[in-house]
Image 1 (tube, rainbow, N blue to C red):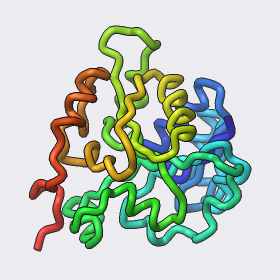
Image 2 (cartoon, helix red, strand yellow; image 1 turned 30 degrees about the vertical axis):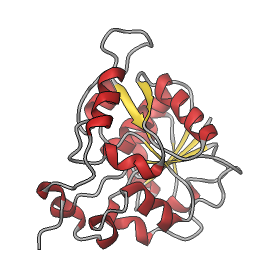
Image 3 (cartoon, one colour; image 1 turned 60 degrees about the horizontal axis):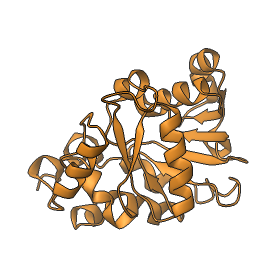
Image 4 (cartoon, rainbow, N blue to C red; image 1 turned 120 degrees about the vertical axis):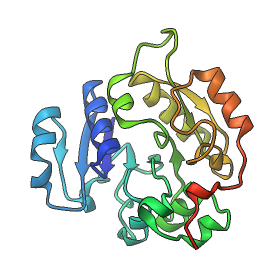
Length: 221
């Protein structure tokens, strides 16, 4: 597939490395000049591009940027992707640590629903809860005992199938985590967040989640 990645931090960089390693064509962008990604491009064979060009003709786009920066994205940033191409978003809301207060999320809107609303397109939530080094280094073949599983939330069945296949390709078991309305179950502070669980434990953790944000994951008054 032709994949555009918007954001080249720890998760974006790790996905660039993993996706190129299994044969995908990747265009990667950050918020700066493509030349700042020359080393990553040289290492992986990915193409460093401006953010406005990352989605061009893409079969799939990955958005992996700080939550607070989502409203600053260009309105037409995803318009040039192929018709029906899924958009993955890996974001998390870190109010105390980075993002400040986002009132709608504080009031209970799922983080991914907020992202979808701002970019004007449906999203699939995945890769938000795994430590980047584990994403980069702990993918293993299907059927391997203890294989890490990743929850995938979204509303489009076909998009979820495409994303599930991609997750499997890079070494993780995909677990259907329900709709975007349900995606709060994998947000920071929930039982599944940050855990290297297998598929059964991921399902159990999703079922145990509470939609009340804990103090660590709320903005301070």
